[in-house]
Amino acid sequence: MDFVSTRQQTPPTGFDTALAAGLAPDGGLFVPQTVPTLPPLHPTGSLAETATAVLAPFVAGSALAGSLPALCRHAFSFDAPLRALHGDHDHLLELFHGPTAAFKDYAARFLAGALAKLRCDAGVDTTVVVATSGDTGAAVASAFHDRPGFRVVVLYPDGGVSPRQAHGLACWGASVLALRVRGSFDACQAQVRRVLADPDLRAHRPLVSANSISLGRLLPQAAYYAHTAAVFHARHARPLGFIVPTGNLGNASAAWLARRMGAPVGDIHLACNANDTLPRFFQGDAYVPQPSRATLANAMDVGAPSNFERLRHWAGGDAPLRDEMTASSVDDDTIRATIAHAQVRHGVTPCPHTATGLHVLEGLRAAGDDRPWAVVATAHPAKFAHILTPLLGRDLPLPPALAACLARPTRAGWLAPGDDALGRWLRQLPRHGLPHPAP
Ligand SMILES: *Cc1c(COP(=O)(O)O)cnc(C)c1O
Image (tube, rainbow, N blue to C red; front, side, top):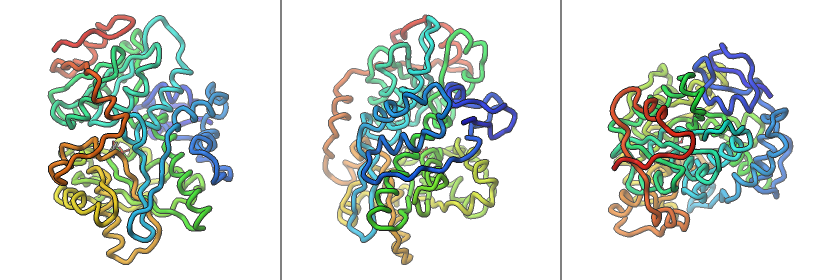
């Protein structure tokens, strides 16, 4: 299949090229030329088998087509259980059983496997550059750290990520370097966009982007929605709605894609934190990007969701998009209150991101909605112990992967100030490996 740009100034491009490029050359986002229809899914099949069925039409004709089943077995090697909550028809889709305990592990592992297959050795390491507000950087670092020929540079806002998140960005050994930026996540993202748009730099230092604009991050995520909805439908003969904690709109775009491909996904509701750009839009206001505000659900601190342009293009404009989803904004006090009562009311302890979704579910039930819903649990609560432990007055058991990560030493440095700091830093890199960070 070919991919076109949302800005329509890029010729149709194959999957492999679109994947390696990240952003389209005209500055737009890649979208598939058509949305394929899913084949009938086997409700007793594995998540990896569903992922292969979902992705097959997109990679058809590409160099990756033959290795797709193996790529999916690697990326979807841990379960996404649908757990029943206390309320009738209330569910939690747990996407946090991977190596860095957040949903981003699935797509990051797919992207790493795919780029490793496509890599041609030019005698120089491929540098993966990624800006993160917490979970993306860890998932990408974990996915690439043992891939020969790759090195990862993670930019993150100093003080903008939790202590455990910061550790998770920097504990992956010699092929990963975390660089703190004195600035916001937006400043980190601006540095990454700038180097990716620099053809000179890219000519002698191969770069790839692993941010959520990448097709390799977006498309694989449709798999767990298609799988969960198909299994649910086989059992209950009803569609399952999803409440998706949302920042950059990557995960929610994937839910929408799964439905568009024919999966029995019901309504999609976006749960946002106090960054309310999307709730305002879905309530009828114009789309107006805002500077991001810091909240307890920091991986959703996004005022200008990077996938909005793609979703609007896909849906066919503002008005049709507003018919596809609903959205709510949940403030920090409500997140705290939801975490505090969740064990009693729902039977689970959520991370702050997942708490926004649980609150939305409570609102739907209070309004008399009795359809089946799944709140998407985007991260393991123990990742956010600095918020949860004081609220709950107890420690949370760490999943083994997170405990192993916290036991390893870290490797982090500072990015110098200046708009072109990342570009200057990348230009002086050797052909292989990464320098030791200055303390
Ligand atoms: C990234 C992230 C989100 C937001 O996902 P988007 O795809 O950016 O909307 C929500 N929760 C957690 C824990 C995350 O890491």
